[in-house]
Amino acid sequence: MKKLLFVLALTFIGQQAFSQMYLVTIASYSIGGCSYSNPEERTLTTVTPTGTETHTCIPAWISEGALISLNQELNSIISQGYKLIETNNGYSDQNGTIAGSELNNGTIYYFAIP
Image 1 (cartoon, one colour):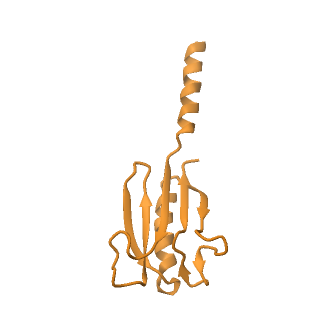
Image 2: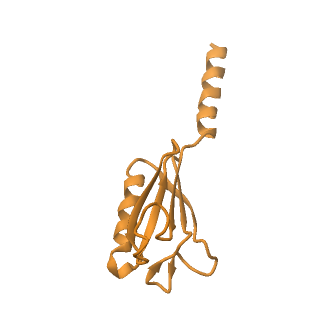
């Protein structure tokens, strides 16, 4: 009985050590197949826990629906049970946007199963 309890305890600890993560980043329009001729787009790159990378073209400007597109992508990850654990804005003096009107290139969102 003690051996079984010990094995189950190690299994539980092992599962917690290898947490699954999603990464979402905002990049310039020239990455991931978004229109090279349209600098008004940003590429939202999502990396799943299995290593699959997907690119979604979203508007660069908040007034054109950039936050709506970003919100939909982040909500789809959260609805799978992931929790936002870290955000890196790319620049220490900017809070995810440039002058409050444009998405900031280099912003990274880290999601993990709690």
